[in-house]
Image (cartoon, rainbow over all chains, first blue to last red; front, side, top):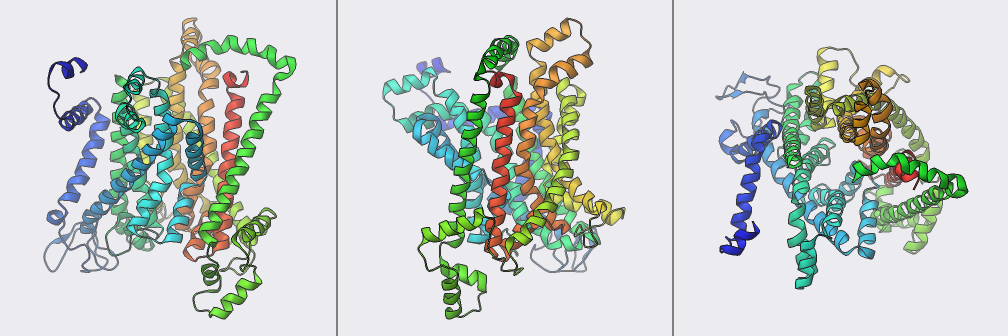
Length: 297
Length: 338
């Protein structure tokens, strides 16, 4: 790679980055576990994008309560997965709910990563009191059982999309920070870092441009796992009644609203359970496949 | 590098045991424990300060939460006066902390009794639940992890790994619904609630324990597998195999001792995870435990209960971390003797 950049005019870096990303996805072919995971994730992403075309009914319309799966609807169409206690079509709610989860989970994971990476590279690269301070903050936050922390934050500041994202960032950032810090401690003594320091590059440039890209392998694997955890978190908060406000379809909230009926109409809760579990499984399998590939070379 | 350290650990053990005999042995460990204890106290103090600031910064909102939204200004002021809320923040914090340390957590606004009367029985119930979760989870996950890690890449390994990914992918709230659909709705074998209204019943404990074990064993099994697989690649295991020892003996006598160090810490740290997990399970099954108490308290603005629960939860986590650190030091000969 180094001689290529020396002899030819380098292509814009984002093109090269895109090619690299595509190539690393092509590598996934070597791991069938990773392939299955990627397939599940892509399936749900497509469902979320195409929600208006796929959903047979309006997810908020109350049509016919307590319909069993495969019941035909008098107004045309079929309730493939039945309806819930107030007559909303479960399939449509699951389809629209995939949007909720696939918007908020990546957003929350992204902010958590941004905060965690900033804290982690600073702690690992500067060391000294900065490291002590940041690691201390992380230690304190991680002394809470996660769900206890979420409950306290959401109960104090209220349940809104922004607060849920902030709470996830607050609780997950320190975990990311520890991983990044460990990676940076390992990488910061490399020759190319010393070279950059000699060139007089600024600390932040060295941290983010020289060190961080070399830590991407473990971070990508962790990001997939972390996305799974964030989806669980959003689901749990919905399930405990601390999630997104009710009318919008949200898988965790759907399970919570209908769990009282689970004893005589289990379809209302089972299908959202399967939906959320499959998406988490997708991310976990993807992470496992990526890890397997990264260990191979 | 770790591999080399493992190979060297044989003679470094001999070398260092002389130092232990000459009297230096106990003190580094003791210093380590004291340091960790000090650190633990610092964390507890910072956490208490944070909780206090979040929940009690403004006396007006405390009074509203305690007395309810339909009280008059005078009533609230009277209450604030009586309970010392007119004092400066730091005075309030220290008197609160003093009460807290002596076990006086205030009065629950919902149950109208001292918090400690509600908290300790609830915590005990959760301890019972936790005990059974660990009693099943530890043997299952260790056995599966060892079997998988023994022959890395074998069909058994792949099967166990994929199965553990699948079980950890089903969140607890989904598996509560699924297991209760199976065992309560279709098979009608088990009760769907665990409120224990007619005294303790083991039957009501089965489903909560099952859900938590299903969710957690996969993670510990994967950790055990990784640790076992790493040990199996070391030189001393290869030596043991090459010198003709029976495979069973190599595993039981040589590999397990080193392979189980990492899972030990993972298992102890699962206490923190369990305190999250019980919230979901206790909420769903109506089990009268610590997690359900915290959740109810948060939904009802019962701030003194929230404070007490959070402090207890953090205390348990920090103690768990201490045990895991000290245990790791103790179990790991490379650290113990250096």
